[in-house]
Structures are given as C-alpha cells and as structure tokens.
Length: 143
Image (cartoon, rainbow, N blue to C red):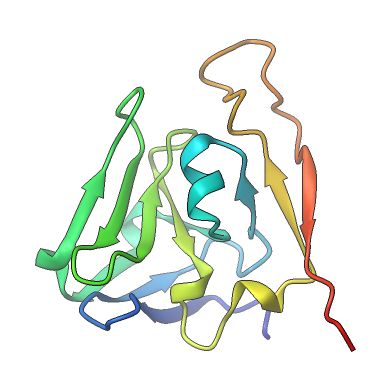
C-alpha cells in the first residue's frame, strides 16, 4: 500500500457510483470517528478537498443522509447502500472518503487508525477535544 498516493479511483460495491479523488495528504489522514453514525458505519476515511472528488458515473445513484445539525452530508449509493464519502461538519470544504471504496485499498491494510472524538464535536462545545485522537483502532493479523 502506497501511503503517499496522491490520487486514485474509487467505486461503491455494485459499481454504479464511480469517482476519482485527489487526496489531501495521501493515506496519512486515515481516521475513524466516535459519533453515532460513524460508530455504526464503521468506515475508515481519508481527506480530500471538496473540489478534488470527481464523480465519473452514477451521480444520480447517490443519496444523501443528514442528521442533527444538518451540516455534514453523508453520500451513499442508492443501489448497494455503500457509503462513498461525506462532506465534513468540522470542515465543510473537505470530504472524508471511504478507503474501502478506493481501488486496491482495504481498511485492513492499516495497522493502526487514529480515532477522532465525534461525540464531543468541536462545534458543540468549547470543552471538546481539538488536539488529536482520543484513541486508536488496531488491526492485528493472526499468524
């Protein structure tokens, strides 16, 4: 896995939605989140600027889900249900892109993924954790 990759193609599970993305800092931005949706979704996301994700096919198949403050926009394929990307609440000029949708990349390729505190979001409280991960998710291969 090339952690410094700058751009890559991606798709949902059924292939209806296909995209090309230019990543902000390769796969170095990989992270998980503790908010209610991310806990249930279980995806690892990497960062891209909003203008750096181009939908190549299936834009009409994308559905959007918003909740709570209605700031973040979570996109998923209406055919297979796979989350492809979301426009972040913490930075609406940025997307989080599901690494499992990226060609040749799996969330299990990462030995360790930082976890952000989405329960105590910086937009909700002055006491929120703004300084880094609250933990790490590790994948240890059984030999």
